[in-house]
Amino acid sequence: MTGNEPPISATSGPTAAPPTCYRHRDRETYLSCSRCGRPICPDCMTPAAVGQQCPECIGEARRGTPAARTALGGRISVHAGIITRVLIGLNALAFLAQSTVAGLTDRGEMVAGPVLGRFPDGGGSSQLHGVATGEYYRLLTSAFLHAGLLHIAFNMFALFLIGTQLEQLLGSGRFLTLYLLSALGGSVFGYLLAPANQPSIGASGAVFGLFGALFIVGRRLSVDVSQIAVLIGINLVLTFVVSGIDWRGHIGGLLTGAVLAYAYAYAPRQHRDAVAIGASLAVAAVLVVLVVLRTASLN
Image (cartoon, rainbow, N blue to C red; front, side, top):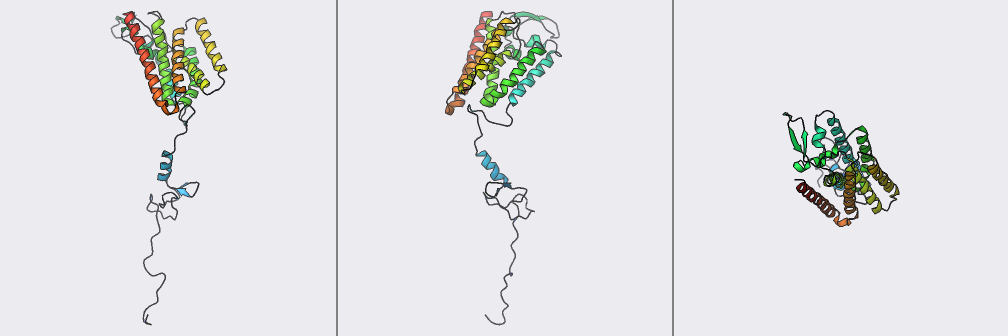
């Protein structure tokens, strides 16, 4: 080193630019994600057990965490009971439509048939109607129609109390399947045994299916089911004592719901979905066969 050379300065050379948030390039930051190491600004960080994490790492961790489930496989969610509320809403809308749409109850009620009926079809002509004439939709639409305010109030109150519990325990898919097949089971039982010209409406078959399911699920979870048994007993007594109640729909719904709940609740954990699908299809197939046989006998 000669005396003519300038001294070396610690500040000589280009200064490094400060890091910026990888999501907001205009924001300087000295924070970084403790998981991936990328720089993040305070608006993007989420406090973690150690340090802070970026939105992508938080999302990846959530996707890799199994959803919390009940003992019977139902997913624990803040939206628990949504299917129950939707079903109540559909029943309420159908009840309102009954008072505004002419002939809706006659067209949607469960009647075996063939019966001669006059409906507002434009021409006013009398036609043969009923499930036996090919109007199979009646087996399900009848479960959303009601005979009066007291009728729908009781059914919807029971649906809200029992449905919310079962939906969380079983999960939305199995609960909805249980409800609809119980409703169908009640209608099919009525189709088999009721006089050909006797109409029937109401969600009682589906509600009785929930009664039966709650009893089976309670036994599976080793809880006291005595109150449920008493509730079922009282309603069965009323079914046969009070005039105008279709006992066939109640019994059919109760049996269908209990059978499905048994399959859902006692299925091995590792084969829970397969058993649920198989049992649901098997019950549906049995109901279809019964409908076909009854239709053949009426025609």
